[in-house]
Length: 396
Ligand code: PMP
Ligand code: GLN
Image (cartoon, rainbow, N blue to C red):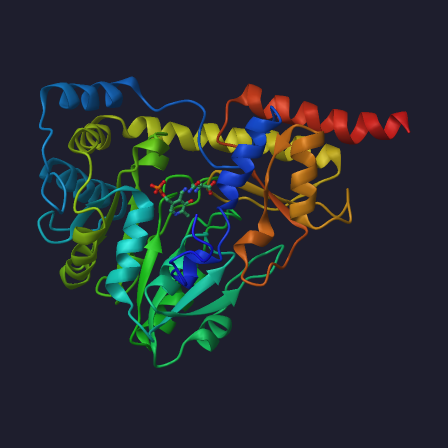
């Protein structure tokens, strides 16, 4: 190998970056034979009929490039879903774009809507892909930090992050990693700040159906004046427990979807036709699965909370998503990441430290548990934690 490699500089956004925490913790879980309550994926696949519909399309075709905006069957099904659940009307030809997962929908939206020198506001804790993709687009990231245990967003805090250069607000509700669902008062505050600005919102609503305790999911787009200022991002992976399929979408006003489609055409151009047809089938025939999943996950959340409380964790409220967070200060003085790395090795349970979702790595006394797992898996994790925390104490 040459003494000095012929590549003096890579893109600094990615060159200095580590591997995502989800990959790191899943790899540690495999290495140590741990129960994985880290990365958020269900361990039971969604309905057979969806997989059959995709398999049929895979065998019988079409297997060549679909249109760049996606198969019309799926765009129509997404528009019908938005009408049914939120009374939102989208023209499938101009206001719906199919992407390779929610991740690509977010990337294409960010790349389409912000450029060098523009400001983008993130609400922290923020899903881990937002910051790097915003920086890679040349945008300047401003953050609004929420505080535990209530994690409430105020108009004052949001307004303070906005300037005349703000072009985009990223809003994730229900919010991964903390399971918050912004209430109407918070949404109205957001709408007010947006109306007084030149910004639009990218609303990451991939957990739209995972809202618990009978609360509604209210898309920001349904508030007055927001139809022209919001794009919504959805993901079939979460709705139908098929996270590996990577079928996502963007819905919104035509001028916004147009520019996002321009970015999409050079990121992936399009996405697998068989999987698109499988998800079109799912939206038409398997929504009962999704609605049932909400109930099932709520029961698992309760089981996990009860178990964690007995062990000395302080579980925080969880209003939606796959995730619950808990305060670890009753059990350790270690920072969350050190605690998680020890737990996966010594207790055989993988979790996610919450500090990774904050630019400054604070707070670092909270951990995230994914409860989108079989009940027996959650019980196994609790039993391992019990052996680790309680039996060990008894022995000493
Ligand atoms: N946004 C949030 C908040 C998520 O948690 C995830 C996924 N895990 C995504 C977007 C990405 O969705 P997808 O898996 O469809 O790319
Ligand atoms: N969204 C998933 C989580 O929060 C992870 C997705 C990924 O690994 N990129 O656990």
